[in-house]
Image (cartoon, rainbow, N blue to C red; front, top):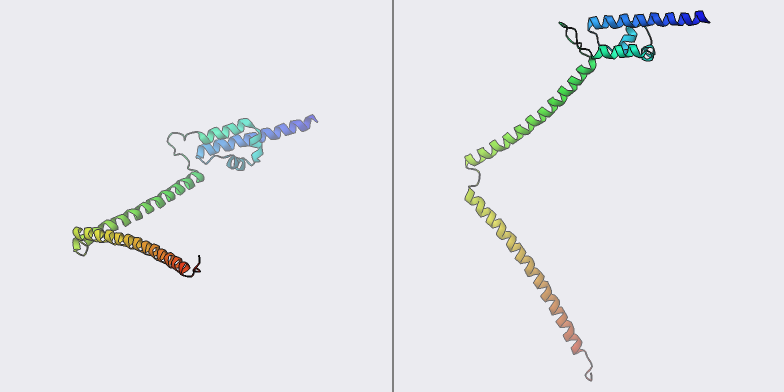
Length: 174
């Protein structure tokens, strides 16, 4: 039984040594350091690294460490995707803003050309048209009042006719 335990310890020590060598190689080559990448390079299972906290801490420290002097930092695929996504979003926002500004510029230039061409109504005609619109509204209000009063008059006349008819048809003795 002791030889079995010793064999497992020796196997674990060999795997541990492979992980440390692979980590050292990845650090020197400025490769993207992740648990999965290290496990592949060391030919061990990821769970081996996760079970040994000291190895896991070394992986995290190496991944967070700045690049060695004179070497450029390794750019991860995830950071490149994030940068690309941010650039696309910014491009979309800028495109929408440019479209908005072009539309506003078109409106302003159109108004300017319209007023300078003489085709647009002068200011005093605009005021007169506003006055006509106001008077049209006033006329419509007065017409509505007249219609209401006409209806009331017709109702009063109908009531008067009905009362006259009922008085005329009453027996003489009453």
